[in-house]
Every structure is written in structure tokens, then in C-alpha cells.
Amino acid sequence: MRVLVAGATGVMGRAVVPLLLEAGHQVTGLTRTPAKADNLRGIGAEATVVNAFDHAALGAAIVDAAPEVVVCQLTALSPSLLRPVRALRGFAQTDRLRAVATGVIVGAAQRVGTRRVIAQSVAFAYKPGPGIRTESDPLWIHAPGSQGRTHRALAALEDSVLSAADIEGVVLRYGALTGPGTYYGPDGAFIDLIRRRLLPLVDGGHGLYGFVDVTDAAGATVAALTGPPGVYNIVDDEPVEARTWIAAVADRLGARTPLRLPGWLLRVGPATTLAYLLGHQPAATNALARDVLHWAPKLPTWREQLLG
Image 1 (cartoon, rainbow, N blue to C red):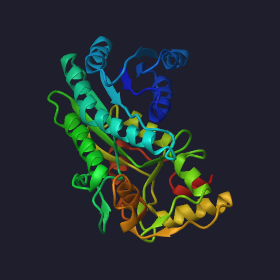
Image 2 (cartoon, rainbow, N blue to C red; image 1 turned 180 degrees about the horizontal axis):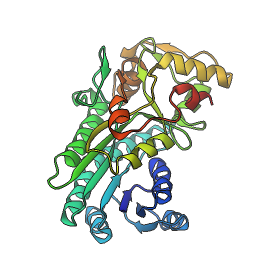
Image 3 (tube, helix red, strand yellow; image 1 turned 135 degrees about the vertical axis):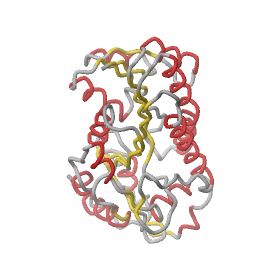
């Protein structure tokens, strides 16, 4: 199968491309630099250098490759959260990619007869409140501040993929990614914040995390090549409160006990997202992905992922 991966050298792309090649697919990866394109060719993929913000070039790359399936993993996130200007720029650019570039990709895919488009969304954009969220629950597009902008960008991405004529649309709502290169990986930004005692427990730390190892998420992406179209939560089996996993990681690192903050102190600007994640996000279930995609995480709980 001819598969094009947009964002082939990002955190998810680096996990997905080798699995696709191992499964015998012909893979073309889009990336921003010649050096990263050489890395893709070195593992057996074809590669095209393109800036995803150049919409004409992005569309042309899709048309030239004429893939049967497109996997969209585009982000522009900064690896550090301790450089606020760079981090905020990365969040804003990622919102633009999701809200606009996804539509460009889908339009080009339609022109060349691509059968399926698989796109990355997230499972931590549901409205706070009691109960476990399923794929039928809408994204919280009226969230405050920049968090609302991000959620609306995700909603635009999902609509582009799911409503496109003659395209089988698949949306994978990944949980909080763990593993190498991720924010929650061993050297990730959130782990660094815990080490420095800079990640507080907000409103008691009752936000419910659904983690997923990046390799498990990549496996779900490969399963989505042939599974039924639709929306799937790709999370592990055990939602965990922020206060539980943060305390466990702090103990593992020998770090001091996390500070506690009331949520109102973080309800300004981009800090609203942190307050939501740590204090209020609801749990999501992976039952549909298990039943329909026949996918199950190999690292099924946060303990295996964060504590080894």
C-alpha cells in the first residue's frame, strides 16, 4: 500500500514510519529539512522536503506522491516548556497546522483519489465533568482562552477528515503521549518540571490522565489503515489522577513534594490548559479501539509507561 506520512520525522512520525515499512508498505514521508529527509531514506522510505505552512507546496507534495492512504501527524510543538515564548509559538503554529493544513492535505488527497486519511487528534480535549468520555462526546470547543483555540483547531481538523467526500476518514484521539521524545518521556518537559518542583497540583490534582506510549499509539495508527473509518480514543487502560502519577514520579526522582495551587491562579491565558489537565480533565475509554480496531496497548497502565 502506498502511504504518505505528513510529519514523518516528528515524535509520532518517527514511531509510525518504521512500523509501516516493517508491514511492507511503500512509505513517503514529508519533512521540513534535507537532513531529516536523508534519515527517512536511510531506513527505506521515500522522502519529500516541504514546509507545511506553504500550502501550495504541501498540496503539490500530496499530488505528486498519489498515496492510497495519508497519515497526518503534523505538529510544531517545542520540546521545552521552560521557554514560554517558544512554547507558545509552537502551540499556535500547531493550531494553524491542524485547522488549515489538514484541509489542504484532504483537498489534495481528494484530487488524486486517495482512499483514506488518518489524522492525529487528542483525547484530552473533552469538557470537564463526571463520567467517562467516549468518541461520541464532542470536543470542548468553548474552553477558555488559548485552550479554546486549540480545541477549535482540533474540531476543524476532525471535520475536514470526517466530512470529506470520497474519503474514508479516521481520527485518532491520542492520549498524553509517553516514551522517547514526548513531553511525558524520561527526559520530557513535564518530567523536568516535576524534578524542579515546578509542576503543581492544581485544585487537588484530580484531573484524570489517559496516557499512551508512543509505540502503542503508532500501532493503533497502523491498525487504522484497514479498520473501519471513524473516531477512536487511543489511550491506555487505566485513567489516573494527576496527583497520583505526579507524586509517584516525584518519589522516583527523589524530588520534593509537589506544590498545591488553587485553579483560579492559573485561569489566565495559556495557563488555563495546565489548570484543566491537572485539575479537571475527564477520563476517556479505549473500548471502541479495542473492539473495532482490535488494538490494545502493550503498556496498559501509567506505571509501566512512567515508572518503568
